[in-house]
Image (tube, rainbow, N blue to C red; front, side):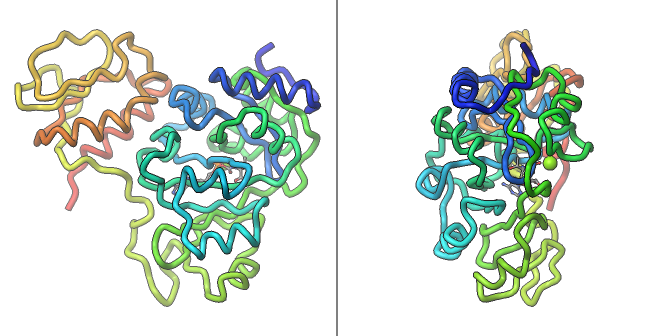
Length: 320
Ligand code: TXA
Ligand code: MG
């Protein structure tokens, strides 16, 4: 049953929608490439996407929606952002915008960033699945990290094997090139990834030049600005076996409770999927406790543990 390729007809799309709602992963065609979809509001389902992709880090994922009405629940759209959606949605344009305060989308989707990437796909199967699932779908390209994107159901099966509960076969994708990604987080729109919508077409709608992430523009961005991930204010001690009563504690597995300022266990049962789903909100809560340091107990380095440890290492790195 796992990884089964099925025709993308109404019955199977309805079945796939049920599976998404129950937390399973479903691969589906879009007009660009196949996506590996999960309920964006279910942290554990999103964690399983990272596990399936075998990504050593948490790269933020694109959230797929039916249109602007659904998108504005998740992200804040400026007039410029709205103009771009009017011109290119549904279609292969992804917009990175600030997250709304009460977004139900998991923190893990954005890798802890205060922003979210949204796109409305222009493919009947993707749209029917969104309608059936009644959830925004977090979906990266359905290939293993470092492999080329999948444009056919068989490519997905070969690359991701049994990671998807179901692969909806909608035939070869038409564009075969991923969506263009634009950031609208600051005043100046910035091209983050060239893709199926050309820079020229976007500039025509904007009436201005599109800045590049490398800062090659009239108004250069400060370098690294876009990559800056959420960093806790508190210092982070990794692989800590002990802690003081004033420290905040980020624990994993069967760690005995000793007094701490605040204590959060990412997964008392030692489940890395559950731990990944809880990671970013736990960091925020511990940071908000006002502790000057967060002591993180050891987390295994296999599977999703690699990405969790990578994220913690970055959070612990000294910064200006
Ligand atoms: O055509 C596509 O976009 C396909 C189909 C399935 O929709 N999806 C896709 O997803 O290519 P993925 O995860 O392989 O690429 C997502 C891109 C990455 O370059 C990621 O860094 C960027 O979008 N991205 C996502 N969220 C972001 C955010 N909050 N800030 C900056 N970049 C973001
Ligand atoms: Mg990709």
